[in-house]
Amino acid sequence: MDRSLHNLFRFFIFLGLIILPILSCISSTNSDSYKESRARMVKNDIENRGIHDHAVKEAMLKVPRHLFVGPENIEAAYSDSALPIKENQTISQPYVVALMTTVAELSSTDKVLEVGTGSGYQAAVLGEIVREVYSIEIIESLARESSELLNKLGYKNIHVKHGDGYQGWKEAAPFDAILITAAAPKIPEPLLNQLKMEGRLVMPLGKNHAPQELIALTKTENGLKKRVVEIVAFVPMTGEVRNSGFK
Image 1 (cartoon, helix red, strand yellow):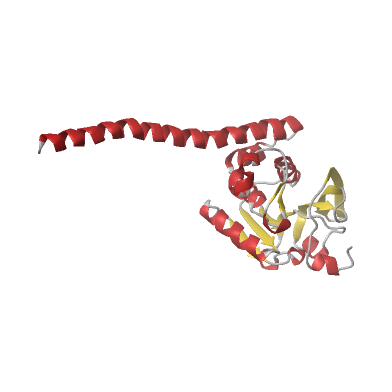
Image 2 (tube, rainbow, N blue to C red):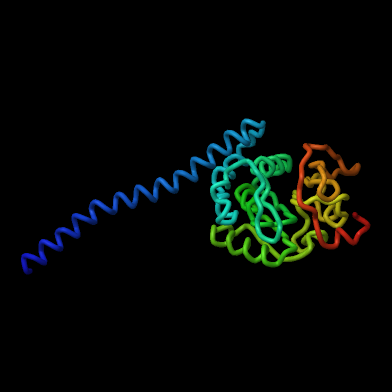
């Protein structure tokens, strides 16, 4: 080999030995920054507010919330706040996601229905904990995009469809738990019919654009056992629920 080419070859090898570790370090740092952000979120906004369910905390440490918000909100992805997403919808604040997931009293063998997929973040958290998640989104573009993202992230146990969540998902019923992530002034009867005995339903109950009660229901042989968990503010549930005597 010509000496000049040989020296050039050695130079590029030397350059690679320097640059590759630097690039690797940068990549690792970027990855760790989100991991650290999730750890701070779980510590400050979930544990410090009284939520200690191990499965919920582990799920929220793992799910990359920054991928479920728009690029303009990535810097705020791990703040304890609801953020706007497409179609005038929102992704719930981490504390509320953790709270709803906790009061649903989930186990690893459960099959869960979520009404209101949004960007897919709550579904991903559920998918880390339970056996199967069925999630319905009334806005077609959100259903499509969240389904694509969840598939890319490898969630084979999460099923998303476009439709009106008021009627639930009859083909997959009954469910061990149902989470409704939009507010309605009354509990949708079709969803109660798809809930197993001793199943749990968690939802914000109340009128549009007003403080609502986050309630947890348990279906028993003697009727519904209800408790009020906290005061919340959710976007309103749309679709057939608005044509069923609900205002």
